Image (cartoon, rainbow, N blue to C red):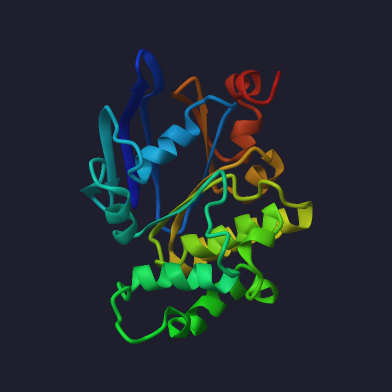
Length: 245
């Protein structure tokens, strides 16, 4: 049974139909890539999945529950983590304090009176940073991080609520090739060890073909192809729309 089932998802802005009748499934422990040219509707689709946008039509079923009309915070607490195309962190805080803040929210510990925030969840925060390969930067201010390190930190934040579904928008943007491989390997490990469903967008086709169990391809708001790397590489419609042939 699929953990995530998307059915006939549609969204328009004015007369511009950005997502049109998109349907797909993602199973627990599966890593699925959603790719397509710029303007294909990938980010809009992601924003509907985590509640930032409300669909005009369609269902978003997470473990059988329709979350299409839920707020982002309710969806997050229901087990959906999100990494954004542009890394979203608190620049004035250290790397460790960013993760600690996410853990405080996850554990609903904001109102623990007479206990400084700096004393809470340090061990758990460091464990998440270790998974993301950022232990050596724990005490560094986020405002001084390279962009690739910010993306890595955001991934640690995204898994702080132990998600059942992780949505990651361009996880390797701004990274060197070795860092790209390390981050994609982390996503694979998370999916396999935690039975977490991972859905990601990515422009690096090498990372997509090397990592994804299955690939979904969008163009002009429509899902035009679905399959493994071999099937997508040889699909004539995909080659014309996305691979430039």
